[in-house]
Image 1: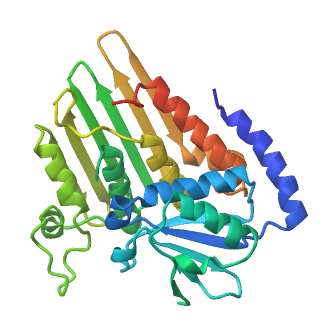
Image 2: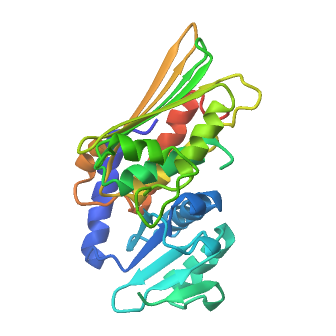
Image 3: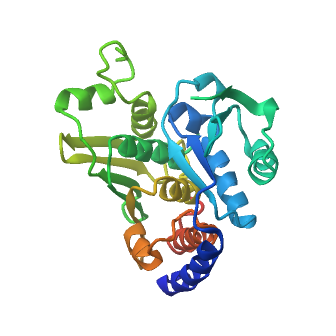
Length: 121
Length: 189
């Protein structure tokens, strides 16, 4: 059974980790979670990002959910925002594409152009 | 939407867009009353009676007037509950928030399944670090009651500056929700 005491251990480990890398957020992932996004599978996209982050121990990546963004025909839609770089929007996402984006873009820094539907603001 | 958990996700996203900072979610699986009840309570901006009525109306889509800020999500959820003998009630007060109560007849043959409650809750909790979630899952039959409570405020107090998106924290929340859903018999409703 998970208890709050487990969190103490996590906190200690995380604090060490933050000391080493400075606690910065390198990449922010924003998953569109409006009604049409949800109907098209955005929750599974979100879940896959969370699983990959946990499995690969990507402690400098932040994932958030947001509402409709006017790209309904390309849902599920995901934005990747990196400091000092153009925002990249991926469309028609699914769990397999998420795994590829995590490996290629987030880990290795290469944009997966096949899935890109928009760039910039 | 194929199941209740996806509707629940949509409703919670509405609460977040309404600038809620505290969202209470209750799922009550009551075998005695043959009822599955979902309650979502937020402290967001709320709606006046006109907007509240329009939010539940699928045919009202006057985007020019920007009256209807929520899309088809609410009318669809309402329809999916009422078509199978359930009920859908939404109460709101501008400046105070909104409460939604949806009831389903548990053994109705055409009721949508509850679906993957865990992924809905995990996503909203981790995906909205600015919001505190208070989740109660309750199971009741004639011989017992099982209650699971999950509260991001308590977790944040333990974690201090460590964000909920920290990998080990994601796993912790995922595992806690998994256990809670099992203990309250909600994995296959």
